[in-house]
Amino acid sequence: TQLRTKDDTEEVFTPMEGDNPKPVPTFDDYRKTIVDIIKYKPSSKDQYDVPVDDITWGEITEPQSVKVTFDEDRPMLFRVELHYEREEEETNIVVEADAKKKRFDWNYLEDPEALEMKPFSNAVKKVVLQSLTSVEQQVRSERQAKDASKTVFRADDGRSLRIRDPKVRPESEVEPPRKKRQRVDQNPMEVFAETVKLNAEGKNTILLPDGDVDTAVNGLRKEMKRLSDSDRRLVIEGIRRYNETGAGGFKMLQGRSAEGKKLYSLRINIGGKGVRVLVKEGESEEGDRKFTILAIGRRGNTFRKGNQPEDYS
Image (cartoon, rainbow, N blue to C red; front, side):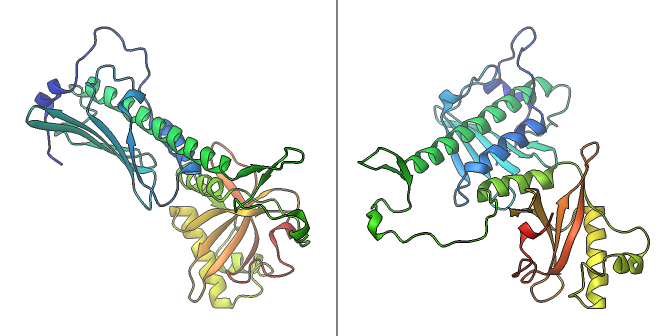
């Protein structure tokens, strides 16, 4: 990407007199919009073209094209590119931002927060939010259209049925459903969106017994009965490391407890399949979320028979 300077802003920026009524977006505005995008965005697609008519340009000159690209592994990290074509010359505005780490970079030599660049960067930030909003509307509409295509209507009473195959089997050929345990599941994309939000906001703390590692091991001996003494110490150290630095695979699970509470897990790699710490959320204060340990065990055995999510309350 070619670096530009303040002198190049005259091509793409026309300051308006007086106060601009639209507030300047915050990183939280970006994060909330991306969380909504993740709910509907297919994991295989990370780049979107935004119709220029979807954006109110204001002080920014309307470009020929707008493109939004999300990082494949970190969707909070994204890039917005405005492309201009003038006679035989091309120029662009490129923004690379991280909504989680609250970082805003662009292809201009000057700092976007510098006093002389502030009016221009504020106008660009407004366009960036509108671009994300346009993508959110695109992926939402695509998901709704896809879901609608899976709905068919029975000729006898007009009731809608949700099916995977457009060919509907006659009722006489449909096998009765097998009985299985009742559990409350969530849409996988909603779970993923909640996990992204979980790791982007505030501080998460998994509660441990007070004292040193040995004290914590003794206090959680029942929950770690299937682990060796050496692994128990490593688990406690892994939980403490997560509480201090946020390092680790912490996510929301699809299952819930018997009383309908959401369940979460922290993945700690200790050889083999690793260890999963199963927790539920307790009381939170000032944006910090606190979690109570329910069970600790090898990841393959955490939800084995007789130890299902709905058995926890």
